[in-house]
Length: 124
Image (cartoon, rainbow, N blue to C red; front, side):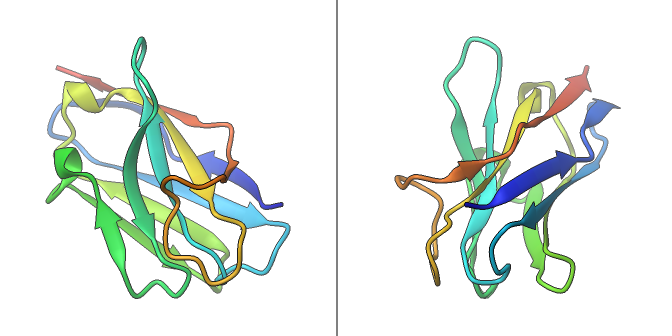
Protein backbone atom coordinates (compact mmCIF):
# COMPACT_ATOMS: atom_id res chain seq x y z
CA UNK A 1 0.00 0.00 0.00
CA UNK A 2 1.04 3.55 -0.74
CA UNK A 3 -0.25 6.46 1.31
CA UNK A 4 -0.80 9.65 -0.66
CA UNK A 5 -1.43 13.21 0.51
CA UNK A 6 -2.28 15.95 -1.99
CA UNK A 7 -1.80 19.67 -1.54
CA UNK A 8 -1.77 22.84 -3.59
CA UNK A 9 -5.39 23.14 -4.62
CA UNK A 10 -7.35 26.36 -4.34
CA UNK A 11 -9.27 29.08 -6.11
CA UNK A 12 -7.72 30.75 -9.14
CA UNK A 13 -8.96 32.94 -11.98
CA UNK A 14 -9.11 31.66 -15.52
CA UNK A 15 -5.69 31.90 -17.14
CA UNK A 16 -3.92 31.43 -13.84
CA UNK A 17 -1.67 28.64 -12.60
CA UNK A 18 -1.50 26.18 -9.74
CA UNK A 19 0.94 23.45 -8.79
CA UNK A 20 -0.41 20.37 -7.08
CA UNK A 21 1.85 18.17 -5.00
CA UNK A 22 1.38 14.59 -3.89
CA UNK A 23 3.58 13.23 -1.12
CA UNK A 24 3.88 9.44 -1.01
CA UNK A 25 4.85 7.09 1.80
CA UNK A 26 4.60 3.45 2.67
CA UNK A 27 6.60 1.83 -0.11
CA UNK A 28 9.85 2.58 -1.87
CA UNK A 29 9.24 5.69 -3.92
CA UNK A 30 10.60 5.71 -7.40
CA UNK A 31 9.52 2.13 -8.02
CA UNK A 32 5.94 2.63 -9.18
CA UNK A 33 3.91 4.73 -11.59
CA UNK A 34 2.04 7.73 -10.27
CA UNK A 35 -0.34 10.30 -11.62
CA UNK A 36 -3.50 12.32 -11.33
CA UNK A 37 -7.20 11.92 -11.97
CA UNK A 38 -9.93 14.49 -11.50
CA UNK A 39 -13.66 14.45 -10.88
CA UNK A 40 -15.98 17.35 -11.55
CA UNK A 41 -19.45 17.56 -9.97
CA UNK A 42 -21.86 15.19 -11.67
CA UNK A 43 -19.15 13.63 -13.83
CA UNK A 44 -17.08 10.48 -13.72
CA UNK A 45 -13.50 10.50 -12.56
CA UNK A 46 -11.16 11.01 -15.50
CA UNK A 47 -7.50 10.54 -16.17
CA UNK A 48 -5.33 13.67 -16.23
CA UNK A 49 -1.66 12.69 -16.28
CA UNK A 50 0.81 9.98 -15.33
CA UNK A 51 4.54 9.39 -15.00
CA UNK A 52 6.35 6.06 -15.14
CA UNK A 53 8.27 4.64 -12.19
CA UNK A 54 11.54 5.92 -13.62
CA UNK A 55 10.19 9.32 -14.55
CA UNK A 56 11.41 8.85 -18.10
CA UNK A 57 7.97 8.95 -19.71
CA UNK A 58 4.92 11.07 -19.04
CA UNK A 59 1.45 11.16 -20.52
CA UNK A 60 -1.33 13.73 -20.26
CA UNK A 61 -4.94 13.77 -21.37
CA UNK A 62 -5.75 15.59 -24.59
CA UNK A 63 -7.96 18.03 -22.68
CA UNK A 64 -4.97 19.37 -20.73
CA UNK A 65 -2.21 18.87 -23.25
CA UNK A 66 0.12 21.85 -23.59
CA UNK A 67 -1.23 23.29 -20.32
CA UNK A 68 -0.48 20.66 -17.65
CA UNK A 69 2.86 19.04 -16.89
CA UNK A 70 3.55 16.13 -14.55
CA UNK A 71 6.88 15.47 -12.89
CA UNK A 72 8.32 13.54 -9.96
CA UNK A 73 11.12 14.11 -7.49
CA UNK A 74 12.18 10.76 -6.12
CA UNK A 75 14.44 12.38 -3.54
CA UNK A 76 11.38 14.07 -2.04
CA UNK A 77 8.93 11.19 -2.60
CA UNK A 78 6.68 13.66 -4.39
CA UNK A 79 4.91 13.97 -7.71
CA UNK A 80 3.79 17.32 -9.08
CA UNK A 81 1.15 18.57 -11.47
CA UNK A 82 1.90 22.00 -12.88
CA UNK A 83 -1.30 23.49 -14.28
CA UNK A 84 -1.07 26.59 -16.47
CA UNK A 85 -3.67 28.59 -18.37
CA UNK A 86 -6.42 27.13 -16.22
CA UNK A 87 -9.97 27.14 -17.52
CA UNK A 88 -13.31 26.95 -15.68
CA UNK A 89 -13.78 23.44 -17.04
CA UNK A 90 -10.68 22.37 -15.09
CA UNK A 91 -12.67 22.84 -11.88
CA UNK A 92 -12.71 19.49 -10.08
CA UNK A 93 -11.37 17.51 -7.19
CA UNK A 94 -7.92 16.29 -8.19
CA UNK A 95 -6.84 12.89 -6.90
CA UNK A 96 -3.34 11.55 -6.75
CA UNK A 97 -2.97 7.86 -7.65
CA UNK A 98 -0.19 5.31 -7.40
CA UNK A 99 0.11 1.90 -9.00
CA UNK A 100 1.73 0.07 -6.09
CA UNK A 101 3.30 -2.69 -8.14
CA UNK A 102 7.01 -2.46 -8.79
CA UNK A 103 8.41 -0.99 -11.99
CA UNK A 104 5.03 0.03 -13.36
CA UNK A 105 4.43 2.48 -16.17
CA UNK A 106 0.75 3.39 -15.90
CA UNK A 107 -2.04 4.17 -13.49
CA UNK A 108 -4.79 3.57 -16.02
CA UNK A 109 -7.01 0.46 -16.08
CA UNK A 110 -5.32 -0.98 -12.98
CA UNK A 111 -6.06 -1.00 -9.28
CA UNK A 112 -4.39 2.01 -7.67
CA UNK A 113 -3.99 3.58 -4.26
CA UNK A 114 -5.77 6.93 -3.94
CA UNK A 115 -5.22 10.13 -2.08
CA UNK A 116 -8.14 12.01 -0.55
CA UNK A 117 -8.13 14.70 -3.21
CA UNK A 118 -7.65 18.44 -3.38
CA UNK A 119 -10.18 20.92 -4.73
CA UNK A 120 -9.29 23.12 -7.69
CA UNK A 121 -11.75 25.86 -8.58
CA UNK A 122 -11.24 28.10 -11.61
CA UNK A 123 -13.40 31.19 -11.83
CA UNK A 124 -14.27 32.86 -15.12
